[in-house]
Length: 130
Image (cartoon, rainbow, N blue to C red; front, top):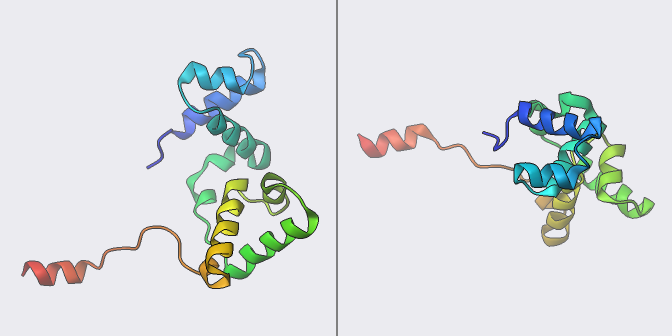
């Protein structure tokens, strides 16, 4: 479950867009959240509209080949993570930053690993209890 609701994110982006609050740093201070979080939500809106706050957009699994192509594109074109994310219609630049870190540490095989927490095998648990 997300720490902040979709409605809350939209509310803050709308405050930023109407321009009366004084910018993202003041919005972040007003609600007691990091300025970088507000910036990420604004970038998400700019790249994907309010649809960007739907969970499905953030749960896409990307192939190792795709991740490597994004990393290589960024290196060749000497662009920022954010610019590369916009080019490839990705939710944020931090995603590419993570892929790059994994690639440098583990190579291509690290990019092919499934991300996230592994599901527990319920049959093993039942065998132990029974």
